[in-house]
Amino acid sequence: MRKAICVILSAVLISSCAVLFLTAGKSGEKDFIKYAEFNVTYPVLKKAMEADIESYGTDKHISWINLLAYLAAKYGGDFKQYSEKDFEELTRKINNGDSLEKLCSDMKYYDYFKEVYTAVLGGMLGEYSEKDESGKMQKKYGLKAYSPIASGFCYSEFDDFGVSRSYGYKRRHLGHDMICTTGTPIICVEDGIVECTGWNQYGGWRIGIRSNDRKRYYYYAHLRQNRPYHIDIAVGKKVKAGQVIGYAGRTGYSTKENVNNIETPHLHWGIELIFDESQKECDNEIWINLYAISVLLSEHKAKTIRDAETKEFYSVL
Ligand SMILES: [Zn+2]
Image (tube, rainbow, N blue to C red; front, side, top):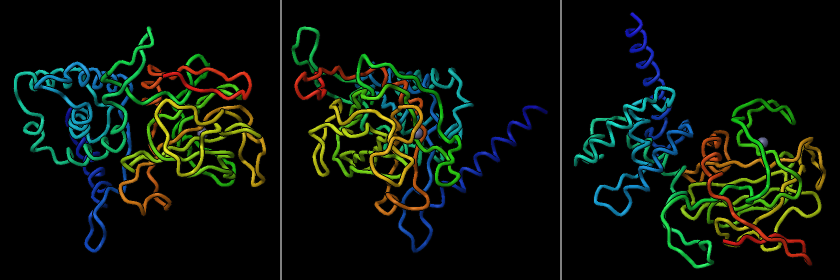
């Protein structure tokens, strides 16, 4: 009986997902993804990343994005259904010579999840160079994106995506808060181009950065009063992962500029997925839950030093 209910529930879940996914591609409309969520939990994200890193450079390289897309297609995007056994079985099959493409060939939503997860994670793992302990540049493969909080600065966080907010109008929290002290150097998570700076009545002093593949719009908000940005930041400038872009503060919740109206200093950061430029500012913007990603990125923090004269922080990578 219980099993029967589970089967029915799964069918309902998968068919309701299907309705959401298939809002893309109606006749006469451009064909692009119009709805997406990111529900991969931290342990699964970490495990998939390790499998990718371990197999890198071998003829059986497993892309973490493809692996996660396979699991998502199996669970209809609901990672509460995740079982370690599914992960082990999949990696065992790949190691025995089965191609992931073949294993996914009859999975209806594999391509959809692959496209969504490529948009989310496409700039986070890869080849990059970093100085080792002795100061020598080393080529590495791994997590190349950085935590938005500089190394050595304390913060606290929890999964606060979707909780309700009431300033202005009743709305859902579409980002991730990292509670820290005012002046904490804020680090650029991923390479990109500064798309906007300035005041926003919700976010206060904020920075918007677009990833180089144009699929992710990073939003960093509530930056410090009076001196929110790093001196090197300007609209149109290229930025590198790991570089200092600004300082945490508590500006925002005011139509007047440079006002500290947020009670607790924190960084609010968000990622908006953009499959088509028309989505950048619209009624159905796709912002994702960053909690698992934020925890993962805490393993890769940028060290900084402070220039005594200018009081500006610079990263040492
Ligand atoms: Zn927030």
